[in-house]
Length: 95
Image (cartoon, rainbow, N blue to C red; front, top):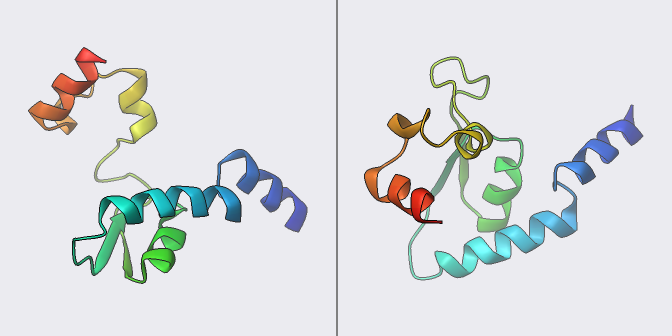
């Protein structure tokens, strides 16, 4: 079971090296902002919160209240436009 979890983590980008790359980038984006919490619905949230030294707040992890994810948005931006701010939707359309 342990090895299956490790394989899953590697496939999902949750290995320590991948997480460090992602959180280092995020740190560079928020370096001048006082962050106290990281709200998320993803397994990697605990790593981001740890690396930013903030409190993690899991929100609707099972996606029962908000049945959406970044993967679903990328698959069909038009169908999921209602979940996006206008400026974000516009950016997707121009990409």
